[in-house]
Length: 373
Image 1 (tube, rainbow, N blue to C red):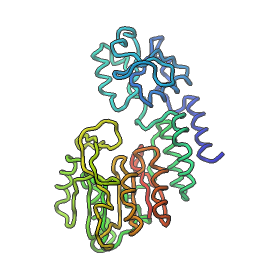
Image 2: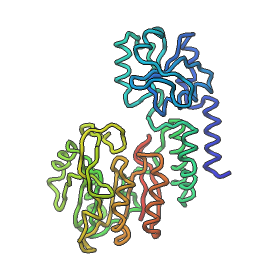
Image 3: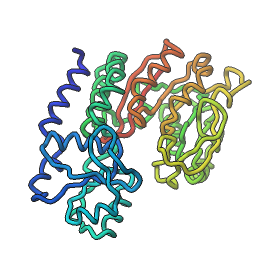
Image 4: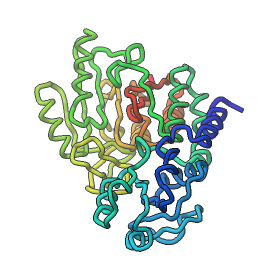
């Protein structure tokens, strides 16, 4: 049995003992015989059901505003909010949806449930997964990722992200360097052409300029900042207007030129191509299309992507540039569980000459960066 599978089995043992889940572990004492309801029937609800069964916590029913009937293969019935107040007015209710936690809590208060009977979402984040779902969909991929990387830091990050998905445990940062500019990995040269995929408010473009100056390597050639969110793009334009040779482009990056539904949170950093919720239609393009007809010296030399789950498609849309010009790549691999094994493999299949490593830039669940150089 390989290291990843051994760690997976060890994590399951911890889960079965209630380790990592103190809120749930102490729940039986707090319930004092009151009915216990889970509100919000998504994949995380299945995870909480599994933990409760292991800890001997009785679940009386599930509740959801938009679903009825039996909840998938769990055997639990889903009742409506109206049925909830009619049948379980004295129940303790745990919110099992992080995205709609505030709305559900407010709805429960309007129904008459006191705050002391409303339990918040029990994990630090919504990346947590049911162990069976993770094993079926991602365990083999994480095993591949562990073997794919040669350095101990990258391998530990793979293990840590698996633990995070299964238990909610936050990752510990491995580097204090500026994100996307890891010393000894990212070397900068005269006349760099930098792609800032997902420029947000322009911070990464400004850090790129700062790194050029700190390292004393002369001048960069051009910066192309792609940002589909109108709110943050306007801020980026204002923040970057003092610098030369910068284009802030009103498009997202993708595998082709088209339009996509994009959830915008008004510039607060949670915009996404991943969420099922849709908000606005935005234009997207591929880097191959954008640079079509350019000479080799006009092609990108350094590509950074933090594009809310669109990284895989955007890499596919840059495969000709990657093959031809071998740009440095700094790609976020935290948006989806499969990113950490699919994205390095995809780049390797496009150009096997790349060397790969991972770094973690914050304590938490975000800012895991794949470097390919």
